[in-house]
Length: 347
Image (cartoon, rainbow, N blue to C red):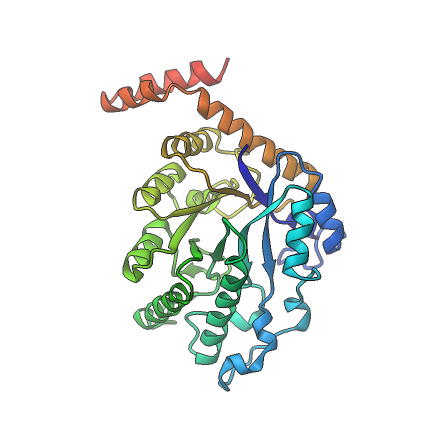
């Protein structure tokens, strides 16, 4: 059985920048959890919450925060406690694969988190990640997700790039050193919400891992992010794994122009199949996180379809004659491979 997790986004209002109240009435936390437990083939969910450290002013070291504000509603943990959630999930055979501190939800991060010019904001993010690591150390097999959504820029001349990069490296390195037994995972993305993000592609994510040199720092390859970064998702997975840095895989699809967050394989069938072929070849046994946002369609149906697609691609990939494909690759028999794929998969 694959290790598949999904958030409760499928049961949220799914707001966007035009319809800010969302496209439907969202479920409450417990209602969403109950719905999530009905998904067949699912055995994990992320632990996500707002920055609880924002309620502790002493973590800011007395620094002035640049006009930012922290709405209380953004930081409320929606369950009774982490232990309560773990026990609830265990009763349903579900584990926590990802610990996801808030790195993007509040306008307090609008001018950067690890790269903020305000040292108080930088310190707040570091302590926020450390809090996530404290939770993760008691959750076997989990890692802490770092999607630095606001660490980027929008306009030419806006940034002193090397200074921002330096702060980003320093902040992540401090977090890595905090507990070397907890994995930290960089999620790269070309853009959104900033028009340019500093950790924009798998090459920059790998370079950051090399520069910091921490054993517990790795990369999540989000298939959708790879697609609209102009990458081959299978290549990204293979190369990141080659350097021993593949911590996690996020599954979704798009038209390459934007992070559409469609269900896996909705658009790019063959590239998703190649992803699973590569994952099988490298012996990947980590988590697959479904990262989709069903704005206008039934959330339960989309999440179930997404899970079913993962198992479909895994089954199809296992049907492929891997040794024969390898031989054809070595002989540069590209069309022979395409014919083999068609004859094996489409019957």
